[in-house]
Length: 414
Image (tube, rainbow, N blue to C red; front, side):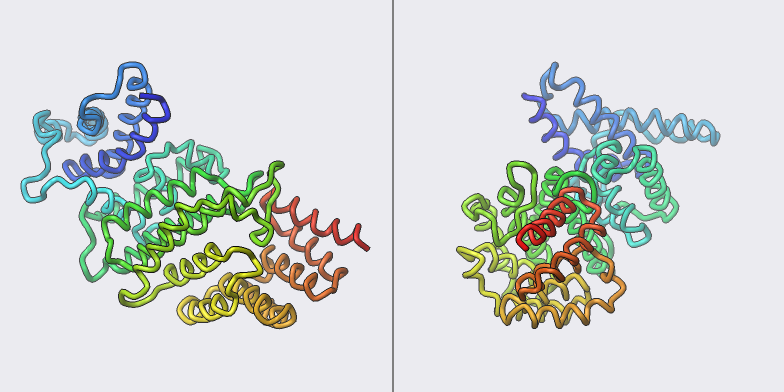
């Protein structure tokens, strides 16, 4: 098996193995370290020795042995090594508790719920999800978010300590809190995808590995909760958005706006899957924000050209979305849709109101949208100034270059 195949297999097995070890022994923080060491051992040995007949059992066995060593060392300092040794008998390593059948899928979902516990900050939820459920190393998570590995190590350690101190059991949350916890899970996956698809900082416009990991985890949640409309909506939204990625970047790495993209490069398979998901989800019960965003994305993806986009329908969907999600970014997107449907001045009027919202007043996106609408309205000088204002506020280098290019174009066209 090729190295890349081994890497994919390990990423798939990581949450299953961690779930099996935590379910049997507890000690989430120490178990997670033990599983990471087992994954490293497999990544080192399997490409040369071959993948074992039962790779999951191999990883669980190695992780359990390492966990035993770690716990013995830790609890020796606490004068409890003998009690630990008596509990951790080798023949029990692969056996689930008598009162709970083994279930790899359930374990993965439980890990997601644990990592997205509301006692953790969003940054910690994301980091822990990528490490424990996504199977990324701490170094990989640190690179994804452009922070030193030592910083990410401390963030993940604090998150694991918080879980340990809280006494959270390894089990699905009760029915009364499941909906709230599921919202946290979906939100974390949404944030991971957004950072992968449209990086907020760094040299590139996107980080494809983050977007792919978010889609994989969202697909897992959907498979486990196929009747949850928002889980379906989130997966649909990711697929429909990511489908445009091949056309979003030019040969020199420059940003290409949706209106100028070669739509033949869009991923037709992802679009078809996303449209089918949202079409099936919308008629079933309450409609949530992810479903509405997916419906908007579907309209964009199914339009043969930017000019043929059904902007009035998109305006209506954004207005529904604003009723349930008081988010300035939603309001910004609504202003764009209004401008496309009713003319640039209608959109600019909405931007004037949005400018008073401190949550987005200094965001580069607000200034970039203003620049675009001013250019549509024919005020090229004001548009140029807004492009430059947006460039000053952007933290992604590719986006900065794009905004400067737009400003320079208006200067040269005078």
